Image (cartoon, rainbow, N blue to C red; front, side):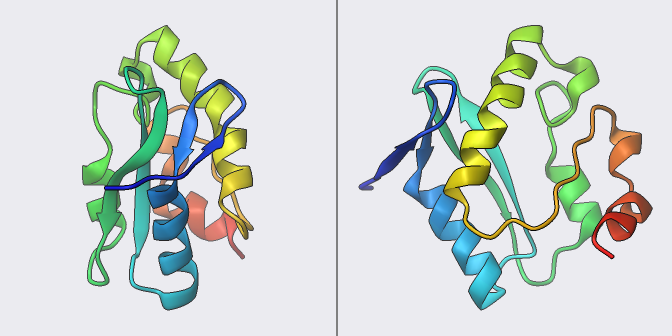
Length: 119
């Protein structure tokens, strides 16, 4: 699989798959959500899970790991720092993000919170 990379602020590279998946979700509406992850060994930001057209909020919650970032209370401090500092690089690589919900606890990403944010 060939990948083109863009530099994120922390030295992590954002894979072309991230951008392609986001554009497919944005323009073609083929994905309901995308969960990204950092591969520390490879120093890349990559796609972890893509939600299909029939998947919803509960599927998104189930796709988030309980012991790594994207579930911060159980995450390692180093991982929290990597995710926090890589977020801006990913956001810049994905053209057209209008809303952002940052949750440091699962209760901060409830469906009601997300609905209120995107109104």
